[in-house]
Image (cartoon, rainbow, N blue to C red; front, side, top):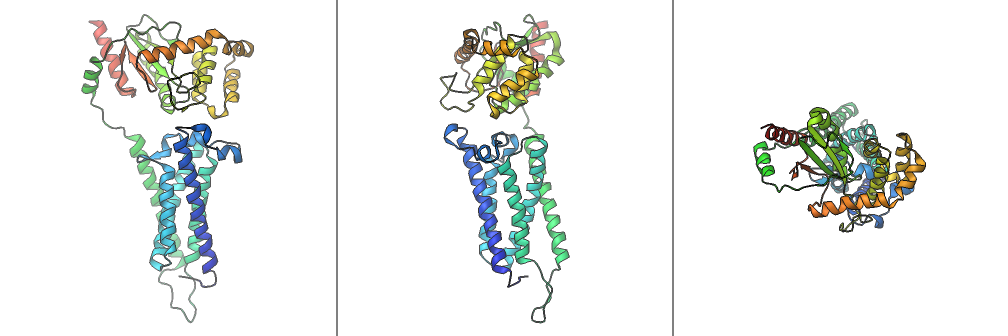
Length: 386
Protein backbone atom coordinates (compact mmCIF):
# COMPACT_ATOMS: atom_id res chain seq x y z
CA UNK A 1 0.00 0.00 0.00
CA UNK A 2 2.98 2.36 0.15
CA UNK A 3 4.28 4.66 -2.55
CA UNK A 4 7.99 4.96 -1.77
CA UNK A 5 8.36 8.37 -3.48
CA UNK A 6 5.62 10.07 -1.47
CA UNK A 7 6.10 8.06 1.71
CA UNK A 8 8.40 10.33 3.79
CA UNK A 9 6.73 13.67 3.00
CA UNK A 10 3.16 12.44 3.41
CA UNK A 11 4.03 10.76 6.71
CA UNK A 12 5.51 14.00 7.97
CA UNK A 13 2.27 15.81 7.10
CA UNK A 14 0.26 13.18 8.95
CA UNK A 15 2.48 13.32 12.03
CA UNK A 16 2.36 17.13 11.92
CA UNK A 17 -1.45 17.07 11.97
CA UNK A 18 -1.37 14.79 15.03
CA UNK A 19 0.97 17.16 16.86
CA UNK A 20 -1.15 20.21 15.96
CA UNK A 21 -4.36 18.49 17.05
CA UNK A 22 -2.76 17.38 20.29
CA UNK A 23 -1.51 20.92 21.00
CA UNK A 24 -4.92 22.50 20.36
CA UNK A 25 -6.64 19.95 22.59
CA UNK A 26 -4.02 20.56 25.26
CA UNK A 27 -4.77 24.28 25.30
CA UNK A 28 -8.53 23.66 25.42
CA UNK A 29 -8.10 21.32 28.40
CA UNK A 30 -5.91 23.89 30.13
CA UNK A 31 -8.44 26.64 29.45
CA UNK A 32 -11.38 24.49 30.61
CA UNK A 33 -9.70 23.72 33.93
CA UNK A 34 -8.17 27.09 34.64
CA UNK A 35 -11.20 29.24 33.86
CA UNK A 36 -12.86 27.55 36.86
CA UNK A 37 -10.10 28.78 39.15
CA UNK A 38 -7.94 31.82 38.30
CA UNK A 39 -9.64 32.99 35.14
CA UNK A 40 -7.64 36.18 34.63
CA UNK A 41 -4.36 34.26 34.54
CA UNK A 42 -5.34 32.32 31.43
CA UNK A 43 -5.07 33.94 27.99
CA UNK A 44 -8.13 33.54 25.80
CA UNK A 45 -6.46 32.66 22.50
CA UNK A 46 -9.80 32.51 20.70
CA UNK A 47 -10.58 36.09 21.71
CA UNK A 48 -7.05 37.26 20.93
CA UNK A 49 -6.78 35.62 17.52
CA UNK A 50 -10.37 35.42 16.27
CA UNK A 51 -12.13 38.10 18.39
CA UNK A 52 -14.58 35.41 19.47
CA UNK A 53 -14.34 33.54 22.75
CA UNK A 54 -14.35 29.75 23.03
CA UNK A 55 -15.48 29.82 26.67
CA UNK A 56 -19.19 29.50 25.94
CA UNK A 57 -18.58 26.25 24.05
CA UNK A 58 -16.21 24.99 26.75
CA UNK A 59 -18.89 25.53 29.40
CA UNK A 60 -21.62 23.75 27.44
CA UNK A 61 -22.95 20.36 28.48
CA UNK A 62 -21.49 18.72 25.36
CA UNK A 63 -17.99 19.86 26.37
CA UNK A 64 -17.87 17.22 29.13
CA UNK A 65 -18.37 13.59 28.18
CA UNK A 66 -18.07 10.52 30.37
CA UNK A 67 -16.82 12.70 33.20
CA UNK A 68 -13.94 14.39 31.35
CA UNK A 69 -13.61 17.52 29.20
CA UNK A 70 -14.09 16.58 25.56
CA UNK A 71 -10.66 17.98 24.73
CA UNK A 72 -9.14 15.42 27.11
CA UNK A 73 -10.46 12.68 24.85
CA UNK A 74 -8.88 14.61 21.97
CA UNK A 75 -5.51 14.37 23.69
CA UNK A 76 -5.90 10.61 24.00
CA UNK A 77 -7.12 10.32 20.41
CA UNK A 78 -4.30 12.28 18.74
CA UNK A 79 -1.74 10.68 21.04
CA UNK A 80 -2.93 7.21 20.06
CA UNK A 81 -2.84 8.07 16.36
CA UNK A 82 0.69 9.41 16.67
CA UNK A 83 1.85 6.34 18.59
CA UNK A 84 0.38 3.85 16.11
CA UNK A 85 1.58 5.72 13.05
CA UNK A 86 5.10 6.17 14.42
CA UNK A 87 5.50 2.38 14.56
CA UNK A 88 5.68 2.35 10.73
CA UNK A 89 4.02 -1.05 10.47
CA UNK A 90 1.43 -1.82 7.76
CA UNK A 91 -0.99 -3.18 10.35
CA UNK A 92 -0.72 -0.19 12.70
CA UNK A 93 -0.88 2.21 9.75
CA UNK A 94 -4.18 0.73 8.67
CA UNK A 95 -5.49 0.69 12.24
CA UNK A 96 -4.63 4.38 12.64
CA UNK A 97 -6.45 5.11 9.36
CA UNK A 98 -9.61 3.40 10.62
CA UNK A 99 -9.37 5.22 13.97
CA UNK A 100 -8.98 8.54 12.12
CA UNK A 101 -12.08 7.81 10.04
CA UNK A 102 -14.02 6.96 13.19
CA UNK A 103 -12.82 10.23 14.77
CA UNK A 104 -13.74 12.21 11.66
CA UNK A 105 -17.33 11.02 12.03
CA UNK A 106 -17.38 12.23 15.63
CA UNK A 107 -15.85 15.55 14.60
CA UNK A 108 -18.47 16.03 11.90
CA UNK A 109 -21.35 15.53 14.33
CA UNK A 110 -19.82 17.79 17.01
CA UNK A 111 -19.19 20.53 14.44
CA UNK A 112 -22.85 20.47 13.36
CA UNK A 113 -24.02 20.59 16.99
CA UNK A 114 -21.71 23.50 17.78
CA UNK A 115 -22.82 25.54 14.79
CA UNK A 116 -26.53 24.85 15.31
CA UNK A 117 -26.23 25.80 19.00
CA UNK A 118 -24.77 29.17 17.96
CA UNK A 119 -21.74 28.52 20.16
CA UNK A 120 -18.92 28.32 17.64
CA UNK A 121 -15.48 27.81 19.12
CA UNK A 122 -12.81 28.62 16.51
CA UNK A 123 -10.17 26.46 18.18
CA UNK A 124 -12.64 23.59 18.64
CA UNK A 125 -13.59 23.80 14.97
CA UNK A 126 -9.86 23.96 14.27
CA UNK A 127 -9.40 20.64 16.07
CA UNK A 128 -12.14 19.09 13.93
CA UNK A 129 -10.54 20.50 10.76
CA UNK A 130 -7.16 19.10 11.81
CA UNK A 131 -8.87 15.77 12.36
CA UNK A 132 -10.06 15.77 8.76
CA UNK A 133 -6.59 16.73 7.53
CA UNK A 134 -5.15 13.87 9.60
CA UNK A 135 -7.52 11.42 7.90
CA UNK A 136 -6.65 12.69 4.42
CA UNK A 137 -2.90 12.69 5.00
CA UNK A 138 -3.06 9.24 6.55
CA UNK A 139 -4.97 7.95 3.55
CA UNK A 140 -2.47 9.57 1.18
CA UNK A 141 0.40 7.95 3.06
CA UNK A 142 -0.88 4.41 2.92
CA UNK A 143 -3.38 4.45 0.05
CA UNK A 144 -3.31 1.53 -2.40
CA UNK A 145 -1.77 2.11 -5.82
CA UNK A 146 -1.99 0.35 -9.12
CA UNK A 147 0.45 -2.55 -9.12
CA UNK A 148 3.71 -2.31 -11.06
CA UNK A 149 5.47 -5.25 -12.67
CA UNK A 150 7.65 -5.47 -9.55
CA UNK A 151 4.70 -5.33 -7.09
CA UNK A 152 1.89 -7.78 -6.52
CA UNK A 153 -1.69 -6.44 -6.81
CA UNK A 154 -3.07 -4.71 -3.70
CA UNK A 155 -5.40 -6.92 -1.70
CA UNK A 156 -7.88 -4.05 -1.37
CA UNK A 157 -8.74 -1.62 -4.14
CA UNK A 158 -8.98 2.13 -3.65
CA UNK A 159 -12.77 2.00 -3.96
CA UNK A 160 -13.10 -0.60 -1.23
CA UNK A 161 -10.97 1.49 1.12
CA UNK A 162 -13.10 4.58 0.46
CA UNK A 163 -16.29 2.64 1.22
CA UNK A 164 -14.75 1.18 4.39
CA UNK A 165 -13.62 4.61 5.60
CA UNK A 166 -17.02 6.19 4.91
CA UNK A 167 -18.71 3.40 6.82
CA UNK A 168 -16.28 3.83 9.73
CA UNK A 169 -16.89 7.59 9.79
CA UNK A 170 -20.66 7.01 9.91
CA UNK A 171 -20.11 4.53 12.72
CA UNK A 172 -18.11 7.18 14.62
CA UNK A 173 -20.87 9.75 14.22
CA UNK A 174 -23.53 7.23 15.29
CA UNK A 175 -21.47 6.26 18.34
CA UNK A 176 -21.09 9.89 19.40
CA UNK A 177 -24.82 10.41 18.94
CA UNK A 178 -25.40 7.43 21.20
CA UNK A 179 -23.09 8.89 23.87
CA UNK A 180 -24.91 12.23 23.73
CA UNK A 181 -28.30 10.53 23.88
CA UNK A 182 -27.34 8.53 26.94
CA UNK A 183 -25.74 11.55 28.64
CA UNK A 184 -28.50 14.09 28.02
CA UNK A 185 -31.57 12.25 26.84
CA UNK A 186 -31.84 9.75 29.65
CA UNK A 187 -31.69 11.29 33.10
CA UNK A 188 -30.92 9.02 36.04
CA UNK A 189 -33.97 7.69 37.80
CA UNK A 190 -35.04 9.65 40.86
CA UNK A 191 -36.61 7.96 43.84
CA UNK A 192 -39.48 10.41 44.27
CA UNK A 193 -40.60 8.90 47.58
CA UNK A 194 -37.11 9.46 48.94
CA UNK A 195 -37.11 13.03 47.60
CA UNK A 196 -40.38 13.83 49.38
CA UNK A 197 -39.15 12.24 52.60
CA UNK A 198 -35.89 14.22 52.55
CA UNK A 199 -37.72 17.42 51.71
CA UNK A 200 -40.12 16.96 54.63
CA UNK A 201 -37.14 16.68 56.97
CA UNK A 202 -35.57 19.95 55.83
CA UNK A 203 -35.46 22.97 58.13
CA UNK A 204 -38.19 25.52 57.43
CA UNK A 205 -36.79 29.03 57.02
CA UNK A 206 -38.72 32.28 57.11
CA UNK A 207 -37.30 33.81 53.93
CA UNK A 208 -38.09 37.51 53.53
CA UNK A 209 -38.99 38.29 49.94
CA UNK A 210 -39.09 42.07 50.27
CA UNK A 211 -39.00 43.75 46.88
CA UNK A 212 -37.57 40.76 45.06
CA UNK A 213 -38.70 40.26 41.45
CA UNK A 214 -41.54 37.81 41.41
CA UNK A 215 -44.09 35.90 39.35
CA UNK A 216 -47.44 35.14 40.86
CA UNK A 217 -49.08 36.29 44.07
CA UNK A 218 -47.23 36.73 47.38
CA UNK A 219 -50.38 35.21 48.94
CA UNK A 220 -50.20 31.98 46.93
CA UNK A 221 -50.22 28.77 49.03
CA UNK A 222 -46.88 27.71 47.59
CA UNK A 223 -43.98 30.17 47.63
CA UNK A 224 -40.79 29.42 45.73
CA UNK A 225 -37.57 31.36 46.27
CA UNK A 226 -34.74 30.84 43.78
CA UNK A 227 -31.15 31.92 44.39
CA UNK A 228 -29.36 32.23 41.07
CA UNK A 229 -26.23 33.58 39.38
CA UNK A 230 -26.45 35.07 35.90
CA UNK A 231 -23.22 33.51 34.63
CA UNK A 232 -23.99 30.03 35.96
CA UNK A 233 -24.55 27.36 33.24
CA UNK A 234 -26.85 25.33 35.52
CA UNK A 235 -28.89 28.47 36.26
CA UNK A 236 -29.13 29.16 32.55
CA UNK A 237 -30.48 25.66 31.94
CA UNK A 238 -32.92 25.98 34.86
CA UNK A 239 -34.24 29.48 34.05
CA UNK A 240 -37.00 28.41 31.58
CA UNK A 241 -38.44 26.12 34.28
CA UNK A 242 -39.62 29.13 36.28
CA UNK A 243 -41.93 30.32 33.52
CA UNK A 244 -43.17 26.76 32.96
CA UNK A 245 -43.99 26.40 36.67
CA UNK A 246 -45.77 29.75 36.62
CA UNK A 247 -47.87 28.73 33.60
CA UNK A 248 -48.69 25.30 35.03
CA UNK A 249 -49.70 26.29 38.56
CA UNK A 250 -50.89 29.86 37.99
CA UNK A 251 -52.14 31.68 41.09
CA UNK A 252 -51.33 28.69 43.30
CA UNK A 253 -47.60 29.41 43.16
CA UNK A 254 -45.56 32.55 43.77
CA UNK A 255 -41.94 32.72 42.61
CA UNK A 256 -39.33 35.14 43.96
CA UNK A 257 -35.86 35.63 42.50
CA UNK A 258 -32.77 36.29 44.63
CA UNK A 259 -29.25 37.08 43.39
CA UNK A 260 -26.26 35.08 44.56
CA UNK A 261 -23.49 35.88 42.03
CA UNK A 262 -20.54 33.50 42.18
CA UNK A 263 -18.01 36.31 41.81
CA UNK A 264 -15.59 37.84 44.26
CA UNK A 265 -16.42 41.39 43.19
CA UNK A 266 -19.71 41.37 45.13
CA UNK A 267 -19.59 38.06 46.99
CA UNK A 268 -16.55 38.13 49.31
CA UNK A 269 -17.03 34.59 50.59
CA UNK A 270 -16.35 33.17 47.13
CA UNK A 271 -12.70 32.09 47.01
CA UNK A 272 -12.36 31.91 43.20
CA UNK A 273 -13.78 34.37 40.71
CA UNK A 274 -15.60 31.64 38.78
CA UNK A 275 -18.10 33.97 37.13
CA UNK A 276 -16.45 37.38 36.85
CA UNK A 277 -19.37 39.07 35.07
CA UNK A 278 -22.12 37.74 37.36
CA UNK A 279 -22.12 40.75 39.70
CA UNK A 280 -22.40 43.29 36.88
CA UNK A 281 -25.23 41.24 35.37
CA UNK A 282 -27.08 41.10 38.70
CA UNK A 283 -26.77 44.87 39.16
CA UNK A 284 -27.99 45.44 35.60
CA UNK A 285 -31.00 43.18 36.19
CA UNK A 286 -31.92 44.90 39.47
CA UNK A 287 -31.72 48.24 37.64
CA UNK A 288 -34.07 46.82 34.99
CA UNK A 289 -36.46 45.83 37.79
CA UNK A 290 -36.79 49.55 38.63
CA UNK A 291 -38.56 49.86 35.27
CA UNK A 292 -40.64 46.69 35.79
CA UNK A 293 -38.68 44.80 33.15
CA UNK A 294 -36.71 42.43 35.32
CA UNK A 295 -37.97 39.17 33.79
CA UNK A 296 -37.34 40.35 30.24
CA UNK A 297 -33.83 41.32 31.26
CA UNK A 298 -33.44 38.01 33.13
CA UNK A 299 -34.37 36.09 29.98
CA UNK A 300 -32.13 38.28 27.83
CA UNK A 301 -29.08 37.58 29.99
CA UNK A 302 -29.59 33.83 29.97
CA UNK A 303 -30.08 33.88 26.20
CA UNK A 304 -26.94 35.93 25.53
CA UNK A 305 -23.19 35.54 25.77
CA UNK A 306 -21.88 37.46 28.78
CA UNK A 307 -18.36 37.03 27.47
CA UNK A 308 -19.03 40.27 25.59
CA UNK A 309 -19.25 41.98 28.98
CA UNK A 310 -20.61 45.52 29.12
CA UNK A 311 -21.60 45.47 25.46
CA UNK A 312 -23.92 42.51 26.09
CA UNK A 313 -25.54 44.16 29.12
CA UNK A 314 -26.24 47.37 27.21
CA UNK A 315 -27.50 45.49 24.17
CA UNK A 316 -30.05 43.58 26.26
CA UNK A 317 -31.22 46.82 27.91
CA UNK A 318 -31.79 48.45 24.51
CA UNK A 319 -33.51 45.40 23.05
CA UNK A 320 -36.13 45.21 25.80
CA UNK A 321 -36.86 48.95 25.65
CA UNK A 322 -35.35 50.24 28.89
CA UNK A 323 -34.92 53.95 29.43
CA UNK A 324 -31.15 53.85 29.07
CA UNK A 325 -30.45 57.05 31.00
CA UNK A 326 -32.47 55.88 33.99
CA UNK A 327 -31.01 52.37 33.77
CA UNK A 328 -27.44 53.71 33.75
CA UNK A 329 -28.22 55.93 36.72
CA UNK A 330 -29.84 53.11 38.68
CA UNK A 331 -26.87 50.81 38.07
CA UNK A 332 -24.66 53.29 39.90
CA UNK A 333 -27.10 53.95 42.74
CA UNK A 334 -26.53 52.86 46.33
CA UNK A 335 -30.08 51.46 46.47
CA UNK A 336 -29.36 48.91 43.73
CA UNK A 337 -26.04 47.96 45.29
CA UNK A 338 -27.72 47.54 48.66
CA UNK A 339 -30.45 45.36 47.15
CA UNK A 340 -27.83 43.01 45.74
CA UNK A 341 -25.93 42.90 49.03
CA UNK A 342 -29.12 42.04 50.95
CA UNK A 343 -29.64 39.01 48.69
CA UNK A 344 -26.05 37.87 49.16
CA UNK A 345 -26.22 38.24 52.95
CA UNK A 346 -29.49 36.32 53.05
CA UNK A 347 -27.84 33.51 51.09
CA UNK A 348 -25.06 33.40 53.69
CA UNK A 349 -27.62 33.09 56.48
CA UNK A 350 -29.31 30.20 54.67
CA UNK A 351 -26.01 28.40 54.10
CA UNK A 352 -26.18 28.60 50.32
CA UNK A 353 -22.95 27.73 48.52
CA UNK A 354 -24.13 26.84 45.01
CA UNK A 355 -26.60 27.96 42.36
CA UNK A 356 -29.35 27.47 41.56
CA UNK A 357 -30.73 26.79 45.03
CA UNK A 358 -34.51 26.46 45.33
CA UNK A 359 -36.68 26.82 48.43
CA UNK A 360 -40.33 25.73 48.46
CA UNK A 361 -42.35 27.13 51.34
CA UNK A 362 -39.14 27.73 53.24
CA UNK A 363 -37.65 24.26 52.75
CA UNK A 364 -34.65 23.68 50.55
CA UNK A 365 -35.42 21.44 47.56
CA UNK A 366 -32.71 18.83 47.16
CA UNK A 367 -32.79 19.09 43.36
CA UNK A 368 -34.01 21.46 40.69
CA UNK A 369 -35.12 18.83 38.19
CA UNK A 370 -38.55 19.76 36.76
CA UNK A 371 -40.20 16.46 37.74
CA UNK A 372 -38.94 16.78 41.31
CA UNK A 373 -40.09 20.37 41.71
CA UNK A 374 -43.53 19.59 40.23
CA UNK A 375 -43.96 16.74 42.69
CA UNK A 376 -42.94 18.87 45.68
CA UNK A 377 -45.24 21.70 44.61
CA UNK A 378 -48.17 19.30 44.19
CA UNK A 379 -47.54 17.85 47.64
CA UNK A 380 -47.47 21.32 49.17
CA UNK A 381 -50.72 22.19 47.44
CA UNK A 382 -52.34 19.05 48.81
CA UNK A 383 -51.16 19.90 52.32
CA UNK A 384 -52.48 23.46 51.98
CA UNK A 385 -55.91 22.23 50.88
CA UNK A 386 -56.42 19.99 53.94
